Length: 373
Image 1: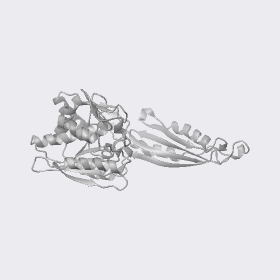
Image 2 (image 1 turned 30 degrees about the vertical axis):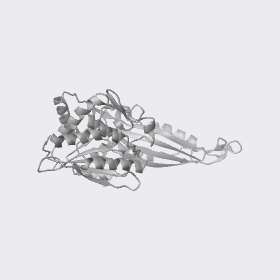
Image 3 (image 1 turned 45 degrees about the vertical axis):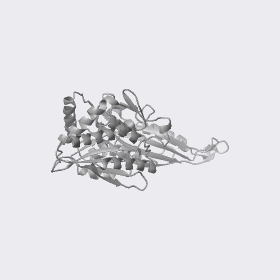
Image 4 (image 1 turned 90 degrees about the vertical axis):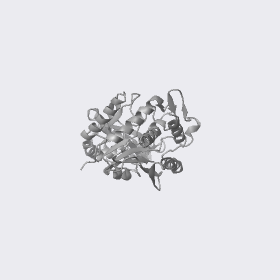
């Protein structure tokens, strides 16, 4: 526990907000230096985003056939300077700090699982590749091709995102995530002198949002949520422009095209206004396929042997595991730290669950399925 917490503390104290490339790059350099005694490390350098890291670990076993991908990210949602009021610290039962749960704790767990396999001289039949992305928290615009390329070479993907709930459930389903931008073009006019000449973009947007709200179908796991609305210039001017950013979540990939058609079928109720719709699905859903269920059953058997119950759940948020599962690669998510408070000042992990998560990942690497023919 002492060396694991020392490593985790150093990692958390290297702040790595997604939108600050120098900081994310410093975190990647620290990880590269830490992994290099045990792995062949490569930094995928990105121009407009932080650098991504690939580490292929040198583990016991003479013959390696196929690959297992350990997948995570080293960026966080916290702005530079958060450590001043939210420092890394430990109590008798928890560790706190920005990104400790989502998901630097998962990185530490995987690293020490790999060290354990090496120290115990346990032969591994497959190559073990760890990929850590720098832009997951902002939609993975730069890293997605790298993730998908590695996944296509892999028999299984183990995602180091935090678990769900304080009982440490893994995630066998995640909703797909996307966004739309709806713009309305109206007609400006003086609100007092020439009211009837104006066509309010804000009123038209309001009517459209009522229509859009009907796209939500909770029974099918579809949610549509306007989150950011802008419009107008002054209270005495009929607004010429208005827009809304709209979050979408779907449980089934088959619903994406249907929902997209609904957005692009919107028509203005005030014919003096015009609409523009942009966007779509960013992350496909991680669906609970037969391959996912099989991988979960393997993990549950291992956890049972450790004396730890391992439940499963579906969550509304997305991860890079959504991309790998959509390719048909067996993917198990939520194998990282057990804790709570992601993206909040209360973010923390349970210290007593670190050893069993290390053991779970180490043993999963020994029994993951062979590559599909």
